Amino acid sequence: MGIARFIGENRDYDITIADIFSPGQKDSDFNQVAADYTIKVIEGDFSDPGMFFKLDSSYDYVYMLASVVGVNRCIEEPHEVIRINTALILNSLKWIIENNIGKVLFSSSSECYAASTDTFNYPVPTREEVPLTISEIAHPRFTYAVTKMLGESAFLTYGKQYKIPVTIVRYQNIFGPRMGFKHVLPHLVERFYKNNENPFKIYGSEQTRAFCYITDASEGTVLAMENKNSDQEIYHMGSPAEITIEELTKKVGILMGYKGGYVAAPTYPGSVSRRCPDITKSKEQLGYLPKVPWKEGLKETISWYKDFFESGKPIQSGGFEPPKNLSYKQKLFNNDT
Image (cartoon, one colour):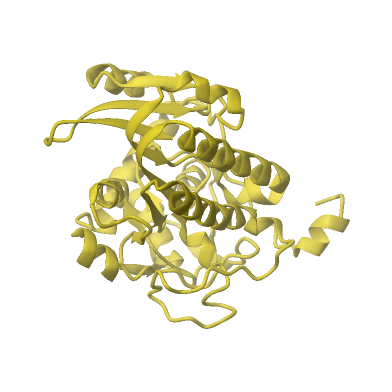
């Protein structure tokens, strides 16, 4: 959760970062940035309401970015995804309405469109007005999406009720260095570097995604927060450049110096066939325009992760696990999986 107290018109902020911090997140680079910009850092588990007493009572902007994410985490510990994300939402809202908060931004996700295209055939690129849907309510894969839908509804409702400006951003496959080890790009680097696969399996090779570099997403997020007309509005933060997972994987292979072959393989249960945002609303209302082509951002990202693995540092949280193509019914009743 990021919190900023606005000072002046030139974006000179007092910044507070409140986070549980996964192992390895607060490294020397983070500590140096925090020191250089005099950022106040509060470390703790904010699913505990008592942690909020460590925050100040007045902020101009609150960026509610905290949540548990990761396909493997959803499938293996769906109850924890529900518990933690719901607690973060409710605790944050209670704190917001009891204190002097100027404006709030809640981060949502393209995961909320899980069934919009494959089940209901809504068009891609997807607009913000498309209904939020999932295909199987009991499937653990969708616990993250369900909590994001809850968060959108809760923050918009509380915003109206308590006269607090609230804006929603739906992130669309944001990537970059230091993004952890729970997503497709760090998984690919890990596999190319450590697993010596040949042929290399491309999970969900024909599926498409639109990847957005972190600097573009960050700029768009600030534009959404600072726009005076964004209250009760929902915006996509992403890139319209739709590519296949096969194209992405082979480009990473080139950057990693891989010379072997490739073979298609099934992907994670519940993974959609296409995902690409329509960013017209963000362009027209916020002046948002992604600047970093995905291939350029990919070079920076892969270089960072390659250096990480070459350093011999251990992965503290996350890491690649092969997809388990199980229905939620199989998952519930097969204790061996």
